[in-house]
Image (cartoon, rainbow, N blue to C red; front, side, top):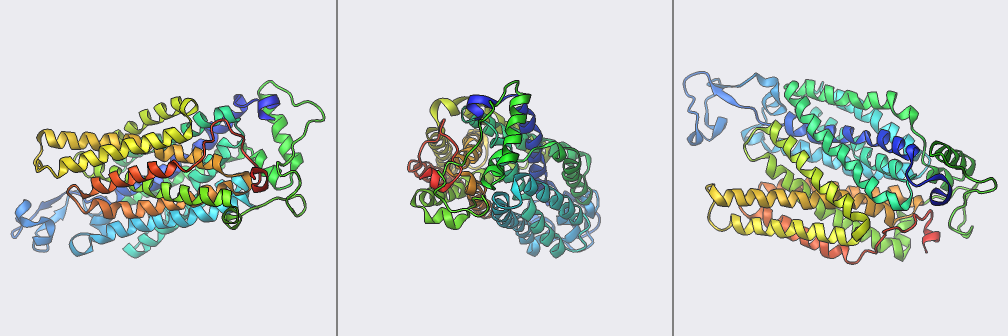
Length: 481
């Protein structure tokens, strides 16, 4: 109906797409705020017994009271909760807790988005929870309260991008879906760059959490009321009249018209049993079908290795020892050319060749970075510049892959299980994000080697997935069969 009557990507879809995609800023804020809130501030000597410099081993070898944090203890969680020396591991623990929450939340809200709550209802819920838990995080009295609230924030933030992506792309026609889907990630990268400016302006961690949590509430009050539910979700829930109402709205806004007597029907040919006209599905149904089972296993593995490389390389860039605000902003901006290139080639080369090419590209440069790190030139100079270049090119390739996977996975599964399958793949990605910091701390050429092997392995796994370029979005598993 989009292709023949209502329009694949007109003014209705453009408005709906932009408004929905603003939710990615919320996910960017809550995901990357840890870089600034959990950083280790500078310190300075204030009395005898303080021996600054490499020989002192940092603050761990200094006498209590002989040093202090520059700017006071409120600059970060590290300075306020004393996360140094023997407690330094707690920084990574809180960050892993956030990604663990994301992993759980992606599965929970992926299922709820496919079932009774819907795409819009799920997005509303996760945004409200992000605002609540984010503001409560700013009031954390102890470290363990902080870690718990970071887990709860991750639980809600893990569903924001997932729900927003599905809601934004489902009303778009097949020939426009790829470039539009890739464009959602400009909002995520833009959110990271904006976060750098916010963190620079608000340099205490409690204020930063408060300022980055309030936009979620603003989004719920000022944007969500103007968004429509997905007509595809209406259809599989047996609400054909509501689906047709949305389709007529799309056609009217796009200057087109749906002819009288034309209506929507599910693609299962009425073979699948349903209750009250509702056709639903779950991950159990995905695993029962040989077609979708193989696709799910492959996308889970690919998402896992892609996330290890993407987040691992991002952490390596941030830990270069340069200005953290500028570094994070440049890292976000550097991802955007990857989105441009992928969006331009997506409908020409297809999803499968692009995924294979970008993963092999990233993995190859990571392996080169590992060889350079093992060559003995560790002290800077040309070798350091080349290793940095390998890292930037690795991020370039994997940023393209990481975002391409959203549109690819969404097209591999039917409407009844699309959010659940995408949520499962997202969970695997968050699991990879939990492991990424552990790989980075190994140091030397090991992280680059792990990233290189992961990227190449992911590219080889994509070989077993089908191409989805210009293919229809199926509604049910029976229809797909």
